[in-house]
Length: 366
Image (cartoon, rainbow, N blue to C red; front, side):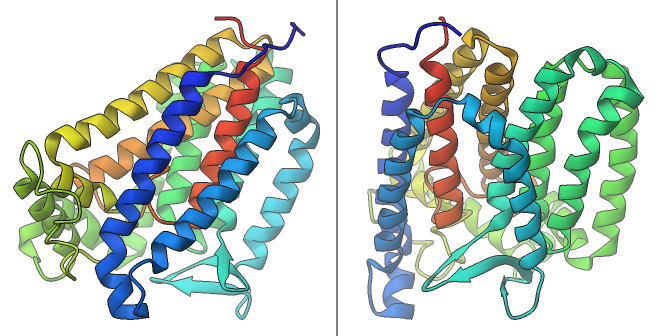
């Protein structure tokens, strides 16, 4: 292995911290009204987000100094632990249910979402598998099926909660990794057809998913039901215009857009900071992804390269889906916006992932 770089990717660090700072400001701005109404404390959500942000940044800098090959060594154990937690979360009395999904395990006053950490564990495990079996990946039976088998097992367990959004991000991330490893496009086309059939079956099996699809196509068909969130999101983005209404001046956070500090925080950001503010955030994500791609291309070995590709793909897919949902281009899926949305598990996971990516950058040549 090449000599360790004296410093990690400083642009990646600054971009991540900038997005995190914007996120903390927007979580307070978006949640203050609801927090005051429900908890008589305008800083209720902001304080918790700040706590997870501080812990996450400390973990990020700590992991940044741990040789990324450590994750290759512990990949099997990590994924076994995550599978165990996915089983535990389904047990009544242990798993916490929110908005119809049993996805959280309560820890004191806080909760942990095992499916979030499964995403990173799966990336590490798949990076290990692909780096050791890259020559087999062109074979459907010997390469592609074994690599996707574990992915879809995890997806199935996540769907038992159910959590289609997190499962979709994980599967999408793994498909990108496998494609980059050299899998044949013809194999993906065949699996894609099967996937479409399976997706349609999932949608038809649950009436609320059908409503989400129809509300995405025409939210005004049911403006007070399935189309409510999308309409209220667009009502936030539209008045924002070029410069926005001003920080803290959102109207939609006054009980129009449900829990605006989570999945729809980008709508509040666009309403308060306008097209320019929203574009700045998108450009910061583009900068982060560009640095990640450079790190992946410059990694000294296949494991480091696949690890970096997986982390970048995970972030990119979440950003695309979240912004797509908020702007009415995709059905509502319940995906958080990395570094900005309120949520301890999601924020911690993203900062841990960036820490791993930063360590790979210390060995990369670019």
